[in-house]
Image (cartoon, rainbow, N blue to C red; front, top):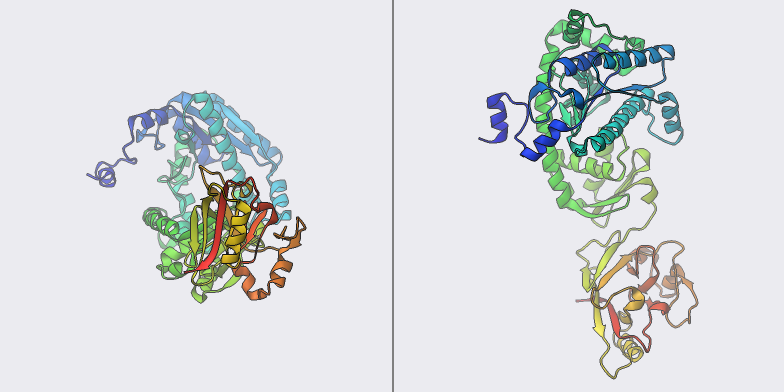
Amino acid sequence: MPNVLRRYASGESRFDRPSGQADDEMRAPVVLMVSGGADSTALLVLAATSSLDIDDGRGTARIARERLHVLHVNHELRGLDAREDEEFVQELAARYGIPCTVRRVDVAALALAARQEGASADTNVENMGREVRYAAAAELANQLSEEFGTPRSAARIVTAHTADDRAETFFMNAIRGTGPAGLSSIPRRRNRIVRPLLDRTHSELCDLLRMRGIVWREDDTNHDTRYLRAYVRHEVMPVVKRRNPRVTSSLAATCDILSDEDAYLTQVASRAYRDLLRRKGDGMVALDADRLGATEVAIARRVVRSALLTVCPAARLEARHIASVLSLVAAGRGSCTLPLGVDARVEYGLLFVRAAKQATTDDGAWLEVPGAADHSQAVGALTLPDGHTLKARLVEVPAGSRAADLARAHAQEWAGLSVLLDAAACGIDASLGGLLWVDTAAPGDVMCPFGMHGQSKKLSDLLNEAKVPAADRAKVPIVRTSPRGQVVWVAGIRPDERARCLPSSKLLLELSFTTG
């Protein structure tokens, strides 16, 4: 029986795991994120005294006390109240014999600094606090994993999100505007983060604490409707519950369905992204724009989103940003600027997505030696003219021949469209071959043209003297030893003096830029 059917048939909340992985997960640390509110207090109590499903290979079961560790993050927003929350959590953890770590972070100052450095306008205190909490939890989980001698992936970070939180997040995301991922709300598990209380309501957890005579802390900001969550909790949910008192459980089922379907579409989109990817560099990806335009729009949106987040993970994307990029793809040309300065443009049949620092640079690609690239292949932002092929191969100097004489005769025969250069001077090894970088001329590029005895010249001047039209200069391949290395050859125009053949040259590099 397939795993997914076995899970439904047996009521299990996990898939089968290899025995070694299961052993690691049953020994790995479990970090409980506890703020001191009712939900997280209940989480601590249940983890210490009852059974929870934290997806460690055992389903709903008791967690070994030695695995537990409490984390409390003091945001330093509420003065004395925040310090009392901190003390409450420390005392509660001590009551159950669980170690407790406290982190104090000035969240308001971090949010202000982020906005001053150009972060998105919605980098508010609430969002920054969430980022700080999860970063602290990840750091602690990694530290404990080393102490426990277990893989980091086996650790668990446990939060106290409830069915109410899930319903509120659904409406919050709907108000902001979102897709299936946002509407699936809070997932039961994301990597190491698990949420075993998603099927319980806030009211149920409060009742549990009252029955055990356990108090909890109240955060007054939870009633401040200037915050979106508080607005949804106190203004939206009461109205919805009057229409459907069971809306929380109804939305939980809806979120589970959306989450499963979103996971499937994500897998399909990931395969499509890999198929469409033509180039990837530091802060840049290039996708096949024609094929992307022919892709189902539901998948195309996800592919574009993946490309944007690949170059700028911090970008907060909205549906209108994805639509702007897809409109460029449909038009076959154009450009637009997205959050955090991400640049998207369609050129040469490719969709280029660049982070801000990459937006003004010319891109290139590696050319294997021996190897070739023709007009049907993307060479960075360079598209070779129709019918043209750029080739590289190695040639040994025949016994009794002079490399310089061979190079001179070869250049005359091919009228400069093919040259022989010293392979070693171009960084090419006789036995291993190598790589050359091919791109286009960039402002400020210089070289030492062959025949000028080491004098340098700007590439722009060289192209101007060769009477290459400005509109065609982006089609002239510039061959370099590396992305920032010296120019070896301006294809079809002039090689570099430093790569010329010498009397001692034994292995030659033949570069050709020809038709046919």
